Length: 70
Image (cartoon, rainbow, N blue to C red):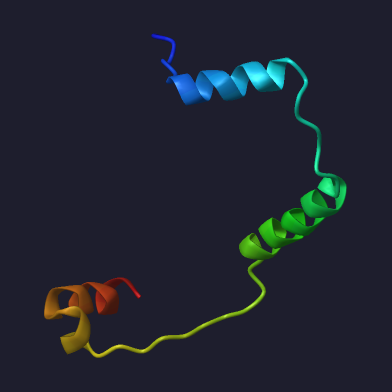
């Protein structure tokens, strides 16, 4: 696998980081906690939703298949 090539701007940023010219903005722990809660809520399945569609809306072929299997 080839290593990715970087342009001059990216190289300048990389060298700056390696020289230690950057520091954390703070609040990282709080932000991680907040986004962790968002991620957990995304996958929570605590509500149900029923949708009724006419067979004409979804096409006759799909409608017959749903009636047959459901």
